[in-house]
Image (tube, rainbow, N blue to C red):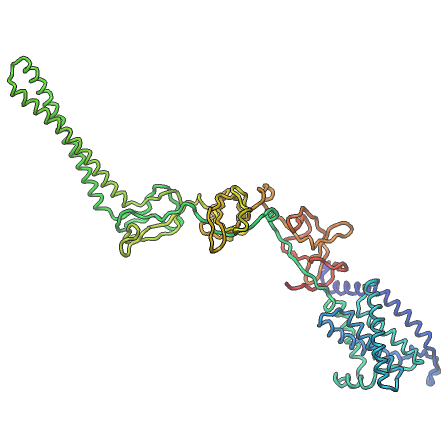
Length: 567
């Protein structure tokens, strides 16, 4: 069955209108009305010959309804003016009722002295104001009756008292006042039905809650992380790669190959670009050929050395036997020394040729641009066909072909105020929240406190390292860092549903909150968990996004209409 339909809402409104408190007040009014009826006396109708009660005859009742409804409209009008000024409704009812009572009494008394009438009217207004204030206060505190009902009921009682006091004569509204109101409303002689209808409409508005709904402050049911309860301070910063390089060439040349783009992942030593190097390759090949030539010369010199050594050894033997002349031996010895020098010369030529080859190979290598470390290409700064020069010295030349960063060296560089730096220490546990990934929190620790301050901002940079890196983390992302007083437990890494403790009330020892649904409140029992900072965890009964009433009034009931205080 639908419990939120119009019919059920009307029935609930009617039920609240017939609460025991209002019923008790109506019973009091009925008892007083009965007493007035008994004391009013009776008379015999000359037309019908029937005995008619002076207070309950048709003319008197019609006149009473007219007067009461007319005075009710005046009371409501005065009350609404006072409400708009911020004064409570009961205060407006007191002043309106005091004025009406003064008018009735003066109309009954009809003093001849005008000054006396003014003084008497002021005295009666003050006296009736005090009396009505006491009545309203007692009924509102003891019976929780609506001030508008108190006003109408008390007005009806005083109307009857004034009627009896005037010996059953009809007490009318002063003609001047009645005529002026009729003229302003354009009602002519039809005054009674309109005020009655207006009074019914006002009563309905009051009971529907449109004019008498309590104003409350609302708060949402949210999810928070338990780390917020152990956070010492918060700081903001950016994700920065601690190892980052603008990759460039040592030599100048035209770019003929570029093998990376933004986001490319490369390994250390991978060729990411190449400069035009045909002349360098040719020079390297020439140097390699020179090495081969010198090695061949060395081989020839070594062969000559072998022959010269053998000839020298033979002639040395023959000289000892005096079979040859000294001249022949000296010529063989000179040839041997010459061959030995030629070998050494060839060896030095080889070393020189090899050095020239190394130089040429290095020049070729300089034309190959390699990744200095494992990382990701962040930006591509040159295109094929452009001239690349060291430090961008040449006109219209690029200094670097790409910028890359080591994604394993990412840290958050946060600015901490000088006044709070004493709450930060090396190795301190932290929690990192990235604006790009609002639903994920990353554990971290303080890696370094930079030993210098920024005088313009009065801050000190703190580098916070990620405990575990995520591929979604990118350099230059904005981040917020929470410095914690202790490491988090595994069960504290997930968000929890919380509500403000000011929204929780206890009924029969059980916690409950008032949930706002379509400008009405519904009492919902909840199961509470531990306190998390200035919030309390909700284990059952509420959902994220529900709005609850903060510090609900003591007389707030489930189903009541409310107004939400802005701000």
